[in-house]
Image 1 (cartoon, helix red, strand yellow):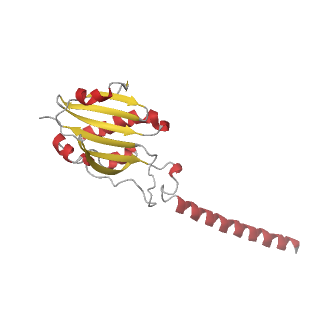
Image 2 (tube, one colour):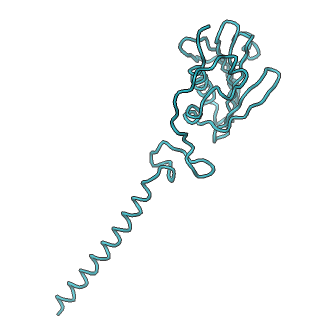
Image 3 (cartoon, helix red, strand yellow):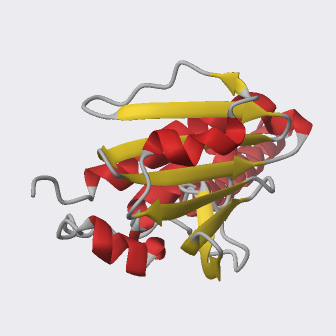
Length: 198
């Protein structure tokens, strides 16, 4: 009698353990379906403010743009995949004394902007920041002048002898070490879309 009762209890425990395992397995399968739920899980996606993935769909490489086209619409300097890779979002066009520009933001509050100078050399554009700290920025095939100040970095790239692009990256003191590298990486991606020759 005692043996039969013990068997029934053991059987009940096994069934309960089986149900618990099934529930946990179901939760694990549901949780593994998306990296959006937990960016720390090793996924490459980052959640957006709306809760959906900020990673854009893979698209074919866009047609190269001329410097003149880029000056007219600086927000085309980088595409969605570039912006995602750089951690940038929300491009905002604007216009000032230097012409049209476009500015992106990071989730940490750093901004990166681009202005195209169709009739100024990199040296001329960089004259305004000669008192900054020169960095060792380099991009294959291009002359780069990069000057760093507190909370800002200017990256000027000579696209032709009398033409250049200016990348400005701005952030708080905690982002100081990342500003110039971001400027260089931004410039590299923008130049990759630029039509060369002519």
